[in-house]
Every structure is written in structure tokens, then in C-alpha cells.
Amino acid sequence: MKNHFIKFFLVFASFCIGTQLTAQFNISTLKFAEFEPLLHKNTDSVYVINFWATWCIPCRRELPEFVKIQAAYLAKKVKIILVSLDFVNQIDETLIPFLIKNKVNSQVILLNDPDSNSWIDKVDKEWTGSLPATLIYNRKSRYFVEDELNYAKLKLKIDQLSEN
Image (cartoon, rainbow, N blue to C red; front, side):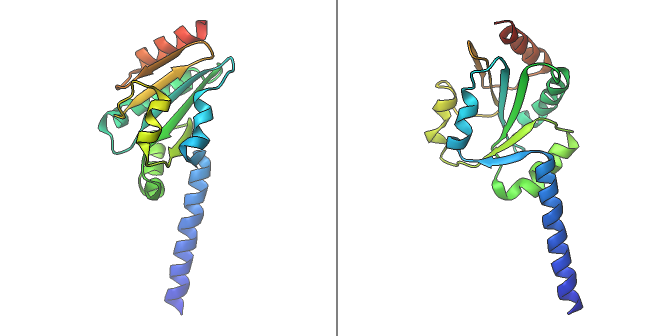
């Protein structure tokens, strides 16, 4: 009886902690159809949407650059959205610890739509599907890059689009 109570408590506690951490990082799990409107916002903001995964080495190197950009543009009309292509069953074990380690403050979306062939070209017609990939846009212009970015390149593109 005692062992059953301990197991129940541990399962319940880990569920509660995982739920709190998911909420702390504002992680939404979406299908592409739910996510797609974020690719076409018509506001006066600049949107930076980065597609990445914890299993992608260049993505792991690049993510701290997005954390720096988020901090630099906190008071400006720039919206950073990190779109993770990790597996849903890896949120608690892999994704959240990675976000904690890197002190991520941006909105994080877990794109749970494995039929990527049906949606990749809706992000950008030139995208082959490799990671990392970043879309930076405002209501007048779009810029897409399928490569690792650094702070200077991100800042340059954001500033260019902020001026339009």
C-alpha cells in the first residue's frame, strides 16, 4: 500500500511540475492549420519565426542568438516565435530542460504536424525542409533563410523591416 502511494505521488508531482513548466514557457502544441495564421499577421510589428529542434546541432548553436535578440527588442514591436519540431513526447524530457538551460523568454510553439510535405512550402516556397530556418516579415516584406543565423544578421534584417 505504501509503495502504491509513493508511486502515485511521484507520478502526480511530475505531472504537476511538467504542466507548470509548459505553462511557464508558453508552449502551445499546434497543428499547422492552427499555426498558419501566425505567418500572415498584418500589423505594424516585425515577426521573427524560427523553425528549430533540440536534435538539430546548428539550431542549438543558433538559439542563444534569438534569446539575445528577444532581450534587445523587448520594448519594440518585434515578436519572436520559436517553432520547435521536436516530438510531443519529448517536451518534458528534452524541450523544457533545453529552454531552461538557455533562459528562453520567447513564445514557443511545438508544431505537431508530421506531414511536413503538406505545409513546408506554405511557410516559404524555397524551403527544402532543413533546419534551422527563419522567416522574418512585416506587412510589406518577407525574408526567409534556411541557415544558421547570428545576432548581427538577425538584427540587420529586423532593423531593415522595422524601417519599412
